[in-house]
Length: 488
Image 1 (cartoon, one colour):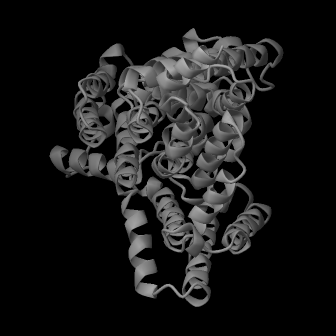
Image 2: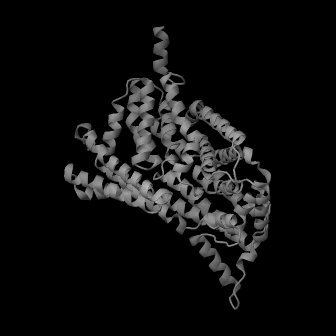
Image 3: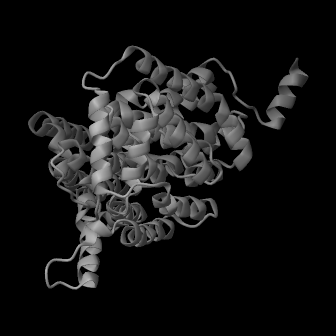
């Protein structure tokens, strides 16, 4: 299956994709926003079985080979799944500790709705570029910003779009980011040359995004924004939590650990444990034991229940109850299952060679530098849609297209930039991709709702393709540049 002549025909390779799309569309029509709560997981599983059936019965690939490759694909997402479970625990514990309530409390007091989207995007950009992780940014700062936006009466799709834009801008440019290091490593370029070259597409995209959020704030007024209601919310928070900057110790610890290059899982786990300690110290009213019950038993049970099932509160204020009744490992299980099923489908498509056939067919359309960049970005998006993982969407196209860039005398940093513009930023726009599933879970907003407002993520591939088509910012290799100068 590694040789192009042994790959399946294109029409056959597209059949499982069409089958999956048909199932997903049907689920949206039948189940609406609840499609990700089970129906889409089953759709991906059935599509994986369908792709495996094509591979076994039509392409005559041994079942055992298909199974091994598919399970290997699932293993690639295990780190993402563990991070997701730890983040679920962290969210529940940080609400209990007063971290999220404090951020929401000060946020709704200090931020005007007219500038909130710009502030949300900027805040996430700063945090993400500092720590190099869009996931950690969305799972911590993003959760608080969603709460503030909801309190201010803004549509959650808008708020989540601004959060995603800022988080991925920072992730894309941070030297601490895994994808920012992965793309040049696969392409063969140098890290800081890669970061500098991305400025041509990244800076215009974020500036236009800021302008977009500014225009929304200027012309859009939330229908249900009521200053008296905001005051009611802040009073309700004061009544049920002890608010103060001292509750932000746990987030500061996480930021410091990540800046010190501590791996994500232990850093987030330490953040959750720090939050549990804060809860015991600063929110003792939440641990009042029942009559005859030991205080230690009550506190231990409350923390573990919150870590697994999420925090739950009943204040009589519907918005407060909705804002703070969330988190926990159990709340992430449907997303973990979605990721597993998506990776199963991607593994089946890869094992049968159908995924490579689709990518090779795209490569055959290449005629010049502009179309080569466009083909690279298009292939990255195809892999995000089918393989459902941004790392695969960077690594596989990077290997495929590297020789094509070399043959055309193009510097490898053009390839690494295209991999990020196509692979990194679009992954979060796809609900069943690991990134889209994560963002949808922690922000409690489906990717379909925030996609129209994730301006930065939508603009990056468009700007990148436009610049390539105009032959702007396309760097040549030293040999090619010298030859062109001599020819003149």
